[in-house]
Image (cartoon, rainbow, N blue to C red; front, top):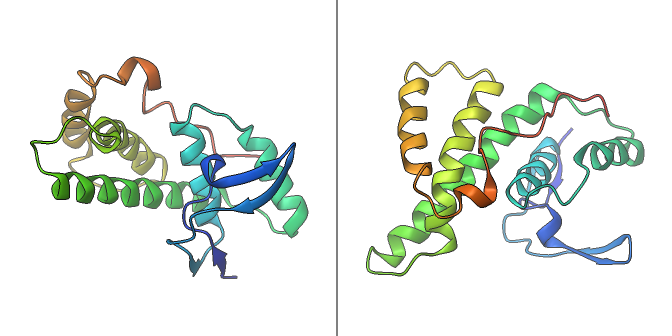
Length: 164
């Protein structure tokens, strides 16, 4: 069943009081879709933010509160979609800024997202003939990145296979 999706769910967009989430911020990407979309956003944001949440516990709580079951294959598919959206957003911001701008979050995050997307596509079972070539290019862009040591290996994605 389709649900209202936030479109950018994750720790950076939750307001909380103690241990309770009190609000969700930044609804500009809200849409009606498969709820796995928001679950994938939580996983991806968690990955980029270096795992501030116990994703397994979050997914278990979601299943308990909704009575729905998470499908790992759909979650993997949506993770690749989320990373694609993030890449498009980074590329658009970089194109608007032009090359004369100082380094931005987008310019530093873009190489990470490119390599993470390759791994997400593999995990989702994408049959892309040139995926190894794309990965090689993504690794070459990631290696000199100033945040490579901070964020670690982008292909070390969280296991979304459950059970939760």
